[in-house]
Image (cartoon, rainbow, N blue to C red; front, side, top):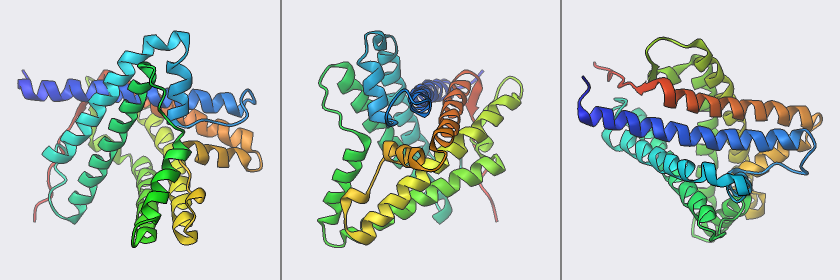
Length: 270
């Protein structure tokens, strides 16, 4: 029998994975809708949540989505603070734990956005507008261009890390699928992470360009990255492939919620 604290962590993780999975299913669905020509442009996380949760049928997903996002933010914070995966305190471990903490902050902010939509406050702005506002604020500070550049390179590094994690399947170190292996969970995880990597690489590149030009209007968020894909030659099929990847990552999150348990990685010795 698992200790009560471990059982609580597992259920916190599962609720969080489910919440994140729902968000990416929504994102992928709207991106696919745009790829099929039913929308002029794709939307980011804020726009997708607003379009769905503000609709008459959105109430069914509203509460569980907000709760799931809060749980995921809390789980990411717990992973970083308690070092659930045994990354350690060296530079390598510190960087991994800092990335987990940053993810927790992002999903906490997304939970606030979702809650504001549900409560009818309607204060949420588009992803691109939010990124540009923060970029403009950073650029107004002494050394702001360097800070924006660091943020951009860190985002690009995250995208590269997702590619490596997908190709090496190293994400399986963080979760083990119970009670038996399910190869399809790994397959959709790989496809989903590659799609997320493309978005991270584009967002990071936009931030670096904004830093070089000192122009916050060059920055872009999730929606800007998807729109860039849509504007390319054969943009419709490319956006459709990205949408499939985002939906795959959403399904991966739901699978994690149903089957997976956090697994502590053994620290390297010597």
